[in-house]
Length: 132
Image 1: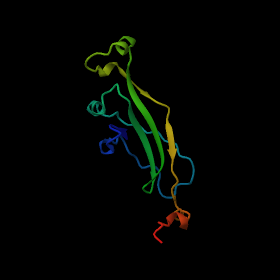
Image 2: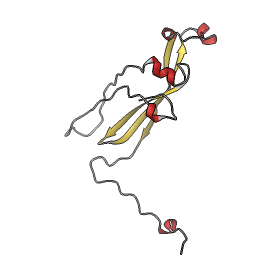
Image 3: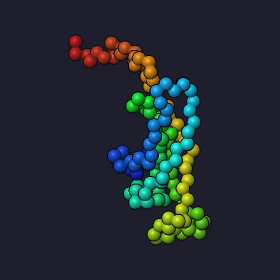
Image 4: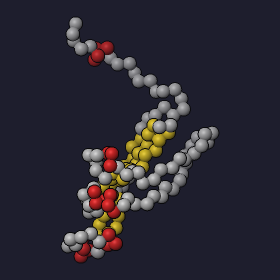
């Protein structure tokens, strides 16, 4: 997903999706390469322009539940120092290079194939609203 505007998730653009694996696959680590086309220039412009920081993330789901997300900050820079110091009035896309930050990995607990994870019972005192 390419994050156009962090305040409006409905504007996020799905760059690619894939189903990996099949029922009965042995449990374990899987390795694959994900290749996607970049977002359209018009989409990058909507997010404040190519020289602003944007977001990009990969989301891994199992049976509709997200178990891992890998996010990156994305920014575009001029490939020539003179352009970086004195940017042109209009964007010269051919003179920009894309830079990705170090990935930020978030993992989520999900039920996988077992029974749903039971949450501990709430403390009765914490649930008392004091209306006695």
